[in-house]
Amino acid sequence: SQTIHQWPATLVQPVGSPLSLECTVEGTSNPNLYWYRQAAGRGLQLLFYSVGIGQISSEVPQNLSASRPQDRQFILSSKKLLLSDSGFYLCAWSGPAYEQYFGPGTRLTVT
Amino acid sequence: GIQVEQSPPDLILQEGANSTLRCNFSDSVNNLQWFHQNPWGQLINLFYIPSGTKQNGRLSATTVATERYSLLYISSSQTTDSGVYFCAAFSGGYNKLIFGAGTRLAVHP
Image 1 (cartoon, rainbow over the protein chains, first blue to last red):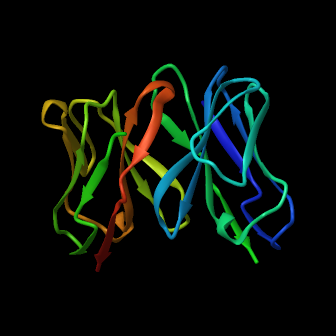
Image 2 (image 1 turned 180 degrees about the horizontal axis):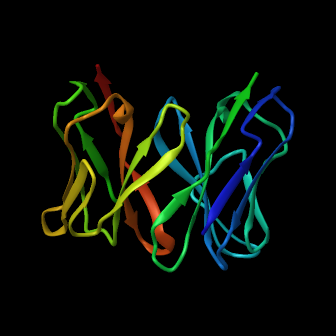
Image 3 (image 1 turned 90 degrees about the vertical axis):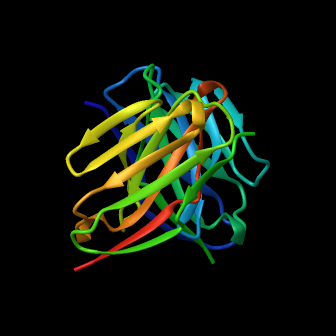
């Protein structure tokens, strides 16, 4: 069966510091991968999606970037964090059947 | 782009009560999902339901795509049903999910 992992689970970072969040999927090949952010406990916003290695599409202009170095690995990064980057970050995957499945999330607090 | 609206925004129930959550979407969608977000933030897949009716235990869902709405029914609610319920619709290519604002459910014993 398929499994999706995210780490770290929680992170506290100072303003201006770099960021790297990792997401990996097991048990499937060629998944579509997604990064979402949730602020204030409601409403998920799609940040990035990827249909293959090195293929990244951005949904909103922001301080973040994404990369997909391997088929089942998706990384969210920032060179310099802002206070507004705080939130709950969720990675998701989908296969040919289109249904999306979410990871456990990373709670980021920028201080 | 597509808009997804959920109602009610908040719901308080006594254990054992039934409830109906509604999701309206502004345009035709390829597919639709319902999720339950537990207190730890995990999004749990409830239903993948582009049309028709599905049931899973005490939960069931109905999507009427031609009228652009979906309903989630919770029967005999339990305290473990508490959390936020999200409806999300696929829009465009690559299965880009558009989420509603959610319904926050609190079930009291």
